[in-house]
Image 1 (tube, rainbow, N blue to C red):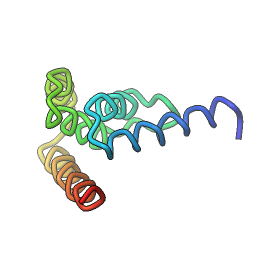
Image 2 (image 1 turned 120 degrees about the horizontal axis):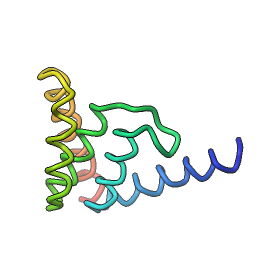
Image 3 (image 1 turned 45 degrees about the vertical axis):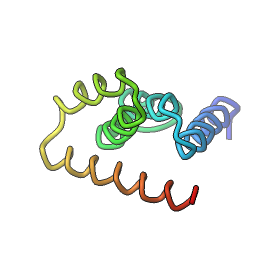
Amino acid sequence: MGSSLKSAVFLIESRMRDAARGSGDACFDLGVCYQTGTSGVHVDLIEAHKWFNLAAVAGLHAGQAARSEVAEDMTAREIASAQRAARDWLGVTKRMTA
């Protein structure tokens, strides 16, 4: 694995850990990664919406705006899937911290 790929994987793993601890900034960063296809991930608007939604739940106004922007390019079914994934993530992280 090349060093840039290792760095990208480390960044994603680090942001995931921070997101699991409730960091809205980490959720927002993950949303950007999935929206733009940076840090070694493929563009995935469902994942982007999920992370922006979680950032918004954490109180980030930028997360709300980004979630709305991504939703413009998604179907109702994709948005529903992203919302379900966000709820699932919240359920998992609550069990981890309980």
